[in-house]
Length: 61
Length: 232
Length: 231
Image (cartoon, rainbow over all chains, first blue to last red; front, top):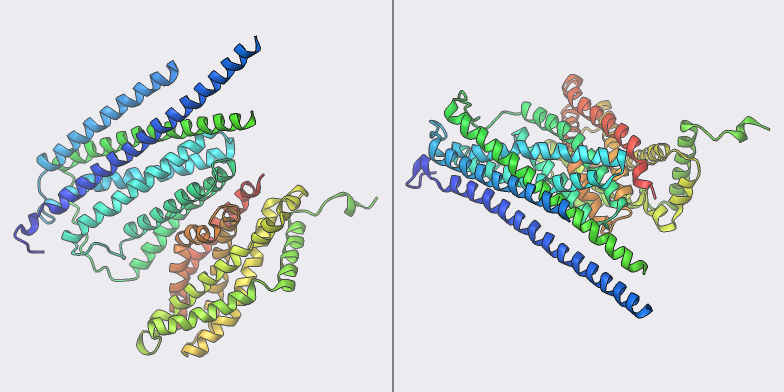
């Protein structure tokens, strides 16, 4: 393990903290993106359902 | 809409708090905490390793609670709790294994050590909950898959202590080839960054759980809307 | 009116009927036990050339080889244990009758334990002959039976989960193998100690782990099995 830094090579500590932070941000990004994706799908479905309803109502009267 | 708007902001507050405490924990661990005599700077890995391990174990327990309650009450919210906690449990277990390896390499001289019961049990646990997520993703969304996953969630939870004991017995009957971590007395210089790290991971767990459960709820809503459209 | 006709058989009676049905079906079709045994023999031969099972390391490696062959072969039996019902849709009919799902589960477990015993009757003597091992120890018999119960207990309930999922062939081993780690550890250790002809008191802790595992998983699975076959 002798590589200039000896017992104080910070690369392992750096890697450990970096991986933890990256993992959390990647997961958060993934969840947030899917959330907004699903939200927009729900809104689109609701909108089309609403407009169909309006159309049939106006057509019927 | 106003209800979900209000909850949205509650989640946001938890999220901001989680990342603020994460930053404080990072500062305390990297700058303030002393370098340990035997392990040198590598001891600092413990401020992320131990909290992620402990919160991972908690999340596995939450999966079991959600699974058991789902089988009893059959309400969707318990299923959401189980699925969200299983996903976070896998992530936290992965982080536990990776940060543990990053500590083991410089201090033990090996990335991995088969004769440590905690390591092996954590790896087995990781595999069980990866299988759990695979079962979820391969099954159709619906009560049959939820029930199947709940069964696996309970079996996996019961398996953890038995696995730990059998690996412990296995190593107990073998020589320990490793240098055990010299547990120094928990001075406040070490204890404070550790506790702040615990708080940070717990807050982050709660925040991500809320986010993931809300996603599951929206997914459910979308499924219902689609099913309603099919009916027309 | 005869009271026999009025009351359906109790838990034990149901278990006995379902168990003999499993055995009768298997005896007629022989689509599980025979392929399992042939597979296990083929696996033993593959291990021979993978590990060069001769000389000094034999006693160390042989228990693991034996148990890996048993567990991999068990996947064949477990994968079949609900396939027939799912293919023919006969599970719903069975469950529409006043049968306790717990009795059904225990009957399937017992059938799988028996299937594994049949497999072991073939491959344990074969291992003993091919690798010149002292495998005929009473402690080994106990280890085999307890190991079988553990494999069958967890394997049967997971098979009923996997039977309805996509990619069930992959899903069953993915779920089963990590849960079987305590069985693998303790069965391999106990077998190794038995081969080395160590005193029973050294084997006992491992049989204790196996017993605790069997008890925990048979009980839990029998209680929650009904949710896996619900409609």
